[in-house]
Length: 509
Image (cartoon, rainbow, N blue to C red; front, top):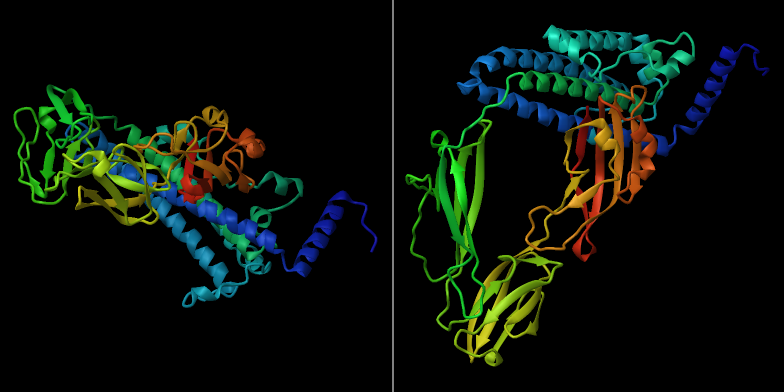
């Protein structure tokens, strides 16, 4: 057929040909999988943002019970509750639309494993356009945004440009001429694409709610606990020592408030505090090694309840005088050289031998051994000293997962210019007793939505390495109001094992 001369009609005809080709191909698996990746990332982001909102709402309840913040909290908590109520209504509407589209595409709620036609391009067009659900959704989103900003006019005026929810027609749709919002987002789109767009608006709503609730919470202010008492703190690394072993003593000053004394439980029972706010616990040990759990409950400087759980492990000597201790830790870690000190009491080193039933045990010097366990659980070290044997039990663990980080942050709020200046993502093993144990990030998925990405989210799945260089074009579009999610993070550590790390998200401001 001859192509028309009018440019707009040419574009429409070309789009029709492209859509017809897609229909003939039944929409490629690559396109379907790409939308699935985006939808999964959107859902992960929504969970992270929702957890943040729940934490803020729990903090409001604590501030209502605190005399120093009760008055302000009584003003701002009802406003936060209203934001949560409005959000719940619009989220319910979006989720109902998702279910309606899936059912129309063959989904059976009673048999979710059966699946549905993800590449069907008629369902979303019929429901959202012809049946009018699209205009209804847009009106509901616009009403929600206006109601959210109207909860407190002063805050609304301040945050009108930072709320990520945008219901305007995307620029691509505007360029095509007289195109509606529904047409731009849902006309002739596969079912999985329509569901992904609904997830985008669901994510925008959750992020908008979080920003408003967080601002209300900031208006309450912080509680300050003034330390008015001090006490010396002294501890030793061990009470079981042999000649030549190092004794470590720690000394310092602990500060506390007499108005916020902790509640301490040791060995399963409550222990009273002395005049210096210190609990003293005494017990008689048996014939075997043991562990004493310690739970300390206290209020931090913001008046929030905190709980610290620790434990003290002790070793009981054997009749032969033989002794085995971990030089760096009280457990053995798979994939590492665990240093053990082995002595035979009054027996010389030449008359002492040692073996292990889990992995290998290598002697590297007088009284010095390296243990490399092979499987988690327990390991028994057997020491023979002048013909007499003693056994020592150790726990065997894998090296813990590292924490994904960008700069000095593990997620949350970050200035946009600071985030854009970062070189990549890393995996830090925090508070691990072994020095020099490292993990390397080998792949991740980058996802950005909100400000700078109103038309469509920026997604870059399966990036090799840890550098942000492959997503520099997306970073350049980030600005205040953008939400960035780093997902599918994988890192390699000791022994070459690959770990999948948790998702982290950043709200740029």
